[in-house]
Image (cartoon, rainbow, N blue to C red; front, side):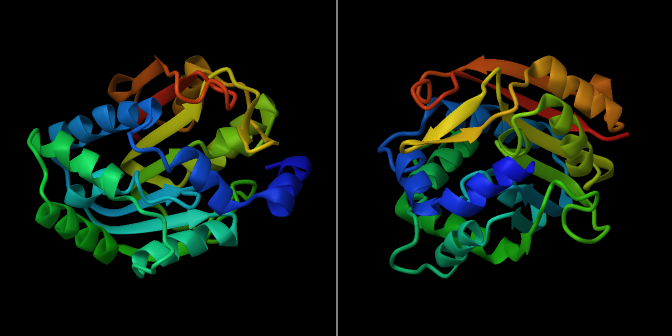
Length: 257
């Protein structure tokens, strides 16, 4: 993220405020539902076992890790802000004031099984997810090696991260190259961005978006060596976050050559 964006996150970001606004509803927002409805069937179709998965720019959330659990041996979560990682640590330790992700985890199980989900199934998935998240890392997508080393992963997931790190589309392209370099050859990348949006709101504070669309994301993937024949890139209208600054998203799933 550029200096201005870095400062706004460093200075005013509040993970608890963000969680209250975006992840405390009694239903699954339409953007999350759209992600689940594409990611879960895709992983099932591929039927591939991944050694290590990375959620890059995870924020204070674990909800997108849940669909990965049946297919990966080990999950790493990385974020720029220590406060975000602290919220994940709370959930992993089942602390009393941790965010409750039961609704999201239950919905993932419903899509996977196409059946009602009971409490025992829910608790089993929570336990399995906690066991598979082995590492929390600091990251900075502005760096050529965003994790501070040369590690790569055979599955890289990143949602609302690079597009929220800058308000410059030119810089976004460079940051995407840094992110996509974390995906190993033959690996799978799952990228979710806002679409044609310039900001999002948390409370009365505005945070940047890079105003990108599906064509920008497709170009970033191809420039970084992803197979166009494997790419599933879709623009999706949403309603739940229009007041917060974005009313459509792009979901891209692609394999690296």
